[in-house]
Image (cartoon, rainbow, N blue to C red; front, side):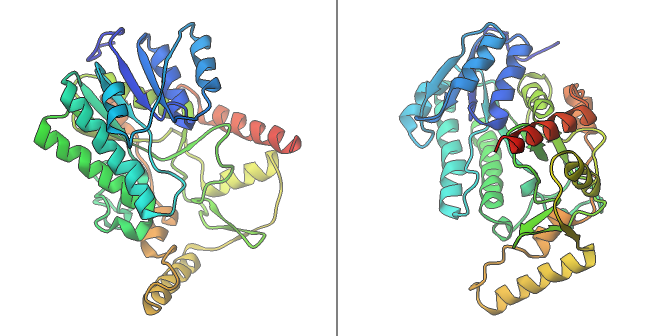
Amino acid sequence: MDTIIEVDQPILVTGSGGFIGRSLVAALLRLGFTNVRCLVRPFGDVSELEKVGREFGRKLQIVRGNLLSRQDCDAITNGAAVIYHLAAGTGTKSFADAFANSVVTTRNLLDAAVGHGNLRRFVSVSSFAVYDVKSSITPGVLDETCPTEARPEQLGAYSFAKCKQDELVADYAQKHGVRYVLVRPGVVYGPGKKRIHGRIGLDTFGLFLHLGGNNPIPLSFVENCADAIALAGIKPGVDNEIFNVVDDDLPSSREFLQRYKREVENFRSVYLPPAISYFLCALWEKYSNWSNGQLPPVYNRKVWANSWKRTSYPNNKMKERLGWTQRVATADALTEYFTTWRKTLAHA
């Protein structure tokens, strides 16, 4: 396989101790790369990373650091030929925290890499959360041509920060000649991840509201996702490109929920048809505007479009340009996912 770097050149993975990060490190080792530098948080658990290294007979370079520290960024980027940037501000509802941990950290990392002059490619892991599905060029289709959200703050802190991060990376390409690839995974799942994603429905007041209906869910099993991200960093001829990452044979929301109930745990759920869920989101948005934001617009028409509007998710671009093939079949991935959760709940 043609690659832009040799197997012994330094590769940096930020967020390597995270859910996707560990699988990415494994994917790079599987491809034969021998000089993988793993950044973890100052007090992060590295036992799972060390286990990955032992599985491939490699001793990983595990470095502790904080991307908000320019000094740490300077140290970890020294000599790095490819940087996979997965670390981000997730799980926070604060715009300030999300911006600091997604945008400021990315700026610090890029400044340091540009200063060293060794960088061949910067892979920034983004998200479907940046897209403006309502304005899709092809109605009902979310692919790489779909525009990004002009007002991402309406989709929440995470979407806002990810949009700004993507803009920053493109800006560094223009001003400093940084060669990059943006990778935008859909719903990444696997053992240890949240059981039922919000695209399927919401668990509220002890009752699960099923909102997805027959819509396909843009799932990407964590190992398949990691394979695509790894290829995005090393494949020639894809500089400054965007790749969406979803698996083949996507189940519908209804199929996923029915199988979860059958194989993991059964619970009561109520299906809300699209017209009703759209009306409720529009009503929430209207009341939020009327109250001058006293009720935050957590659910609005943009959120509805991004989460519950019927949409298809092509993955042909990453197949054709990256040479990606799905290593773990969707049926097998779902079986592993549900089996893990069934065992986890049985021992809870």
